[in-house]
Structures are given as structure tokens and as C-alpha cells.
Length: 402
Image (cartoon, rainbow, N blue to C red; front, side, top):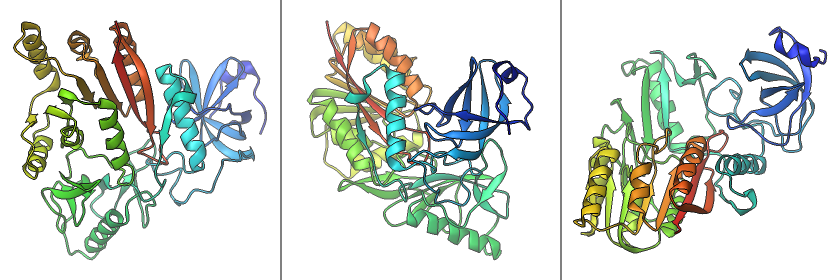
């Protein structure tokens, strides 16, 4: 082991190890951040502030990537991972950090991405284990597991501490039947969601419900199925929905864009005379309609449309006076963000927009455009819906100002 000089960082050997001290923050990908000369190094498996021995694994134009070989001065926040596959499995990246350090890192990431004061961000968390009720699994025909980190290799497991007990039990039972040749080999990739009383898989698998399962959130019944998006943190989802509904306020009309199975839409109905949910997925739309059928809520409507297409028509109707401007919009777009509808949102000029995002870099980019369009960021909430991973859910309330 040796220390590299600054000029050596541009012509490293992958076998070369070096010592480096990481800074106080983590990168968007949950990696330690260090400097060697004028080069930024992202260090896998490092905790903030640690002195580590590391080796390079990849070179990029503006930065390099390394991984920890040995921890020379451990951070007080470092803990022993609960999973024996940590560091190999591609699922969890932060099991080496305690819960407090994970939350602090994620709040810092969101603050930086959104240009919002970290001290003003409200952070919401659950138990960091046994929370995940929905997951995507892989199989080679004999084994079942997850993908390895940065690889298509399969990592089979006997225990996954982030899965809910019922989801883990269902997968392990299916694996046992597969090993005993009681069932046919599964597809290479499938998704399972655990409901109140059963698990749904897509594509269909023996022993799993093929269609929807009931999921109770804060006393209200919804429907989920494998292949349709549903928030995966069983413990934190009730508080998550409560906060979004609170931020939306009340009024005559609310739009729920990218409404999925109607998780927000149904709750917004208690605060708005009329709520319209827009969702392109036919499967999610079907589940939302099933949920609506359980309740006498004439003010709730679901539309199965691509959001950009529907919103464009709606803006035209409000401009002509044939449709009323909403009092609030809730949107939870895919990871790529909402760049294709930002112009329409600015044109509508609704008083409140509640923007929910699982990709803070996309959210940060979109907030720049919304700020220029006449909005200010009134509040930011961080929900740790994905403990032990670098993923984080951010909720930004935007208010219109003139």
C-alpha cells in the first residue's frame, strides 16, 4: 500500500491500492467522496470522514471510482451489515452505515440537488429493516435471487433482511418447491408484491395470486399486483400519503398526475370536491378503478391516458374557459422526471403543486424551470422509503407567487 501523488491519479493500475480520507458527505449513488490532487474519487463501501485503503475499479473523464480494501480509521457511524451478501448483491449499498447516518446523508443529497436549506428539510423514516413488500427477483432456472452489483450474475439468498417476513417466506417456499421439482422453472425475471393475505406475482407463478391482492394503508383498502407500481415500504407509506394530502390542501378540484393505483387520489377526495387521476398504465388504472368501486366517492375520476397528452387537452380547455383551473396538482412522475409537462404546469398556474420524486437529480432540474415559471419551493420533505439503499423519496411543495 502506498499514497499516490496527484499526477499518478491519471495513470493508475487497477491493482494499485492507496490511502485516502473521505469527506463528510456521500455522493448521489451513496459513495464516499475523496480527492487525490485535483481528481475526485468516489469510493464504494466508505463512510463519511473515514480513512480507508482503497483500489481503483474504473476511470472516467472527470472522476475515478474506487472500492474499500480496508478501513484504517472507521467512522462512528459504521456498523456491521446484517446481510451476508452485502457488497456483492446489487440491492443494498448502505448497510455499513447506521440509520442516523443514512438519513443525514440523504437529507444532504436532497438539499444539494434542490438548492434548499438542509436545516429546513423534514425527514421521515421507518424501521430500516423488514420494510420491503414489493421486489423484482431473478432466476437461472434453478436458483432465485437478486442481481450482483454491476453484473448480471445471480446472488441467491437464504435470508434478505429488508424484505417483509411474508414476502421472504413466499419466495423461500417457492424456491424450496423449485428445488424439489414440484414446480416448473420460473421466468428469468419476475416481480412479487405482498398484500394483506397473499402475494401476487407477474408473470404468473404457481402458488402466487395471478391478479390483484388487497393492501390496507391507514385503514383504507387498495389493490396491488405484480407488475403494477405500488410503494414498497409497508411501514412508511401511511405517513407518506398523509403528508402529501396535507400539502395539497383543499378546494374544488385537484389533479393527481401519474396516479398509479390511486394511492393519493382516493385520499385527496376527502379534501376536494373533485379529483381526477391520470395514469397511462392500463393495469394500474384497472386496480385504481377496483379501489374506487369499494367507496362511494362520486367526485373521484380516473383517466387512462398518457399524462402529457391528457394535460395538453386540459390546458386548452382551461384556456378556453370550458374547464376550471385546479386548486392543486399532485404529480409523481417516473425517474426521468416531468420535463415534458412543465410548460403545461406553468401555463395552468395552479396555486399549489406537490411534486413527488424518487430521482432527486431530475427533481432538481425540473424545479429550476418551475421557479422560473413563477413558483417558489415552500417546503421539502424526505421520506426514507428505501432504507439501506442510496435511493430517497423527496416531496417538494411549490406555491405560485406573482
